[in-house]
Amino acid sequence: MRVLLLTMMTGLLLLAESASGVKWKMPASWKAQGERPMRVATYTIPASAGDKDPGELAVFYFGPGQGGGVQANIDRWQGQVTQKTGPAKTAKMTVAGMPVTSVDVSGTYALSAGPMAPTPVNKTGYRMLGYIVEAPQGAVFFKLTGPAKTVGANEAAYLGMIKGIVKE
Image: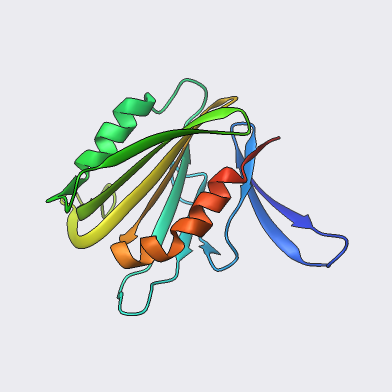
């Protein structure tokens, strides 16, 4: 569900997103894309200098008890990155009283071109940084992919967005 908030003090229009009983705010430099099947939100992250592709953050919510378990999704996401440039890293933290698991993996990303294109496009030099938030009404999956430099340049803003998640 997309909600527009008007701040009374500044008159600025801020875009806030929500799903599964939680809400977050995208970083100001990111651009919200139109609706897509199976996604709560999709954001385009500007490419860093020297990168030809932008990054993309896809946010998924499938409903209570849907979308598979945390470890199954981490395993699936790691499997989408071949020829890894180092070991995949996972970590756990708590945000607003909710468990959050992260996965960080770099290498060649098998980018799905959609359901009508069964063969993925291999993107070398990519990085995937995902967070799974175990929200009140089911897991919310945040998956950022893009050139490693672009993802790295946006890592702090992305983590800030995740740490800023609040329960509705």
